[in-house]
Image (cartoon, rainbow, N blue to C red; front, side, top):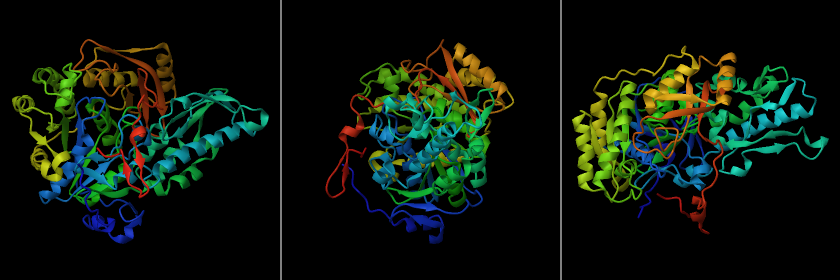
Length: 543
């Protein structure tokens, strides 16, 4: 049973970081935007990543929250930096993204639902750009846009497979120019990605202008700035660009801002939020989406060098249920030491991935009630054999108190040297960058390309995208591009199916397998278990 703890007024949370009331734009008593520019960075960045998850996820968010609370218990001024939840997963498969048990960010229901309206602003900006584009076609198409080569999609923050591919402009001349179109999840949009990477408002407007919407009949690219869309889009996004301040269940500061997808984008909260936290706190804990092969790889290759956010320590979250799963056990909730032993191969690969970028990870074993001590001993022995710091984390059940051991190990790791290094130089050809990630991070033997992907690769090179980092879009539940391959697959080849230049965001998306930018709902969506009573009490969103 979760005990609802008293929330502090957000002004008191801000005061812990030395933030004056005048810097806050309040959204009720417990949420606020932090106005103004981030102070000069003084804090130390701690990145939280994980091994390959089960479909249910392995508690990175919960661990990150609990680690901040534990650092405060050790007398350290710490802050959290997290992505905002998307309504797609909230009502779909995974549910909310505000932690669980006693390691939560609050007010959790508001954060999981409408929050401060940031996603509404992003959705509106995306759809405004689409509306201006279709109006341009309708009003004479002065730019000569080819309706067959429009890349832009509309946005919706809800899983709805029926909207992936649609026909627009039906009903006659008065209703626009008929063309194929579609929707993608708001968090999958380029606007969400560039909002997260923009360093200031000038940079934001420049990035908005570089969004490529399509091509002319003659093959010339057309950008958002050509449609005159930048000013109005920026107006919609202006307030959303300021980071949000909330609190953990123990009343400690948490910056929760923006939420790009961890597979087709870079999967971390905004640069602005991280910089605000680093300017105000001595220690900042930031979560990277999915596992080391997705969120962490993109953080190191895209965010760290684009924004200068270089971690000083990396926490690698593991669970026994995930190790059982990757050891071949379908009933992964129940103890199975032999399956855990087989599953350690997956953990080993993720350790190697962290080391690729110049760090020795702290292994955090996120404990569940069904875990057996024999299984715990296997993971601890694995860590000790490799000279890695290891800690059990019980923050779900005990809050910050259950993360003190982990916090102590993280502080120990911060005292050791690290040597951040990206995986590839930006002047490498795109194909070489893709191969570097596939072979070094996934463990693939090689990379294959469909005919369509080969054409897209050549087009990307001609379009001047070769100097950008790559963002690999692949399955989250396997190190390979096949979600059914568990553990540490070997002897596999990944297949690139498409590439898309995202000049506003500043990266090239490399699609592998059947990645959809607008997921569908499962047979039994989380939405079916959510309700609210007459008193406004929401059930079905606590974890």
